[in-house]
Image (tube, rainbow, N blue to C red; front, top):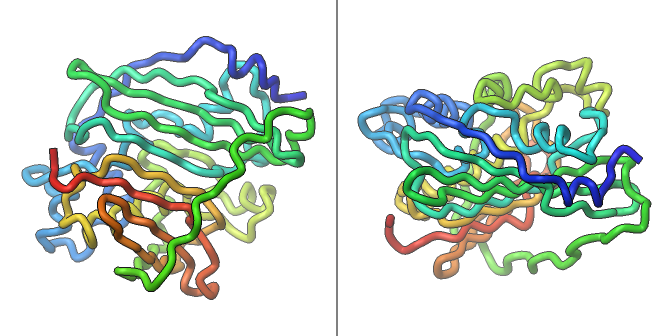
Length: 289
């Protein structure tokens, strides 16, 4: 069996050092659609170094290393083909606002392996800290087709109840035709998002947008629409990737705001609101810390 669950979970954590600059942050923000309109003061918070803040989802690419979906496949006990791998979900806990420039130590390990019958799910946990203490904890759920069925733990099955009532806000975000090509410059070189032949091998008509790009676009929409544009207010952000998005399509982002929690549902306008992100929750503080 290509996945040895016991070996993967028991393996020693993998540690390393990452660093980033304002340029890395700006490139990431452009990769999730920031800077339109280019002179809008609200957008300059993401693009101009003298006003720059860091959207917390930058943590998923900080250091320009391989993202969780790829780096998780090189962990002990894991040996699978990239073409059979999909990003199932992502959760992020932010311990304090991220600095525009920094150096941090990361520690990564397979926190769990779940047997879903016809697939396996790996949970890759990465924790980052700098000289001032913890920065973030990042969980990537990696869905591997054809690797289940060994009788292991199926993992959590409970899902949050969908939000009720009319959304408090609805926004639409068009995706550029070259959005995936721009986003991948932040470190996710998976050919699924650029190479038509590889995409066809994986079962798609054409290259798809990175799930983490949709993840970033959605968080930015929440921050800009409901949090006064203050990225430092975000404390945690989780989602389940429910469907593909193709460059050139439009995201419809519905938001329900209750206290310090925002529930979100994201669909694709051109495909009758086909789900892109579900079970999506943003927790935030009342003010920037």
